[in-house]
Amino acid sequence: MVYTPIPSVVPISPFDATADSQILRGAMKGFGTNEEEIINILTTRSNAQRQQIKSKYEAEFNRDLIDDLKSELGGKFEDVIVGLMTPLVEYLCQHLHDAMAGMGTDEDTLTEILCTKSNEEMHVIVKAYESKYGRPLAEQMCSETSGHYRRLLTLIVTGVRDAAGTVDPEKAKEAAAELYAAGEAKLGTDEEVFNRIMAHSSFEQLHLVFEEYKQLSGQTIEQAIKHEMDDELHDAMMALVECVQSPAAYFANRLYKAMDGMGTDDTTLIRIIVSRSEIDLGTIKDEFERSYNRTLSSAITTETDGDYKRALNALLNGA
Image 1 (cartoon, rainbow, N blue to C red):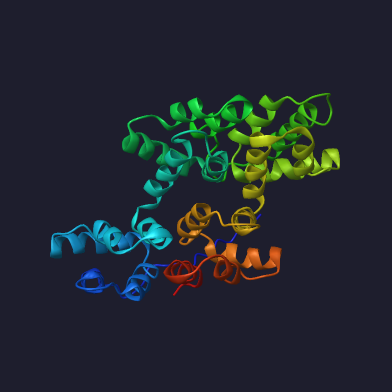
Image 2: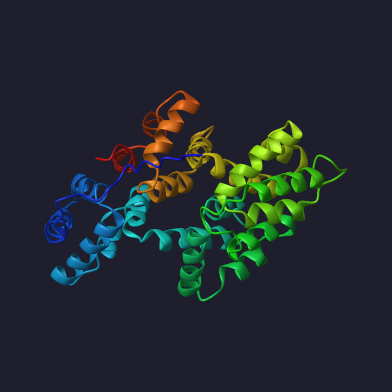
């Protein structure tokens, strides 16, 4: 299993944070705003470089760059730009918090953020969440979710997954047999067994488990999950399986659904484009075209407009 993540945004070199901060100030000073310059700079710098620009901007002009951007921009375009200016972990924490705020819970967002992370990434998110909101993520999540879905997410959030790269072929055979016995081989489903194996094993180990499962049962793990589970637990299990096999396929599907049918799920569209741009957005873009027979750029162009469209396409195409 070799997953090659290709980012669409990489650090620019040479890089001059002072010059960038001056261009941004000029783009927002006086009457009107030069959105093109804002897009040109902020979509072609890495997040770490954007944080340096923010510091220089404050030092030079005694102003907060994000506040200035918010006062000059609006709508979805503002959401993209402010997202770019937010450190990634903080950005994901905001989306987790929003998914649980107010009436109802956005389980799809919880699943997308929590089920796609390694244990190391999860640890950083949990720490940042409590520091930002003064409440443990696990505690808040428990009050917003229920049943086996809550149990699965709690296991993931509490960081029980083995470290990335941990592999044991013998244990993979045992786990496959346990999954088979807990699902297809019995009447009803023992979700606890699925939860334990899916939340504890490293992604590399799960890849072996799924191969062993197919050898043992003649069915893929996806087919088993489809038969054995429904609702949020089904979606979370499928997200885990897809991320083990190809994160790009999972995120390409999320983007497709965000733009499919009437209306657009702009929040999901923006979050994935912004949060994956320095990880594997290039790979996601290729996977989207392979799976849906159209370019991601053309789908975005159909669903969005104006500076919002230009900013997303700039992130997608690396310029």
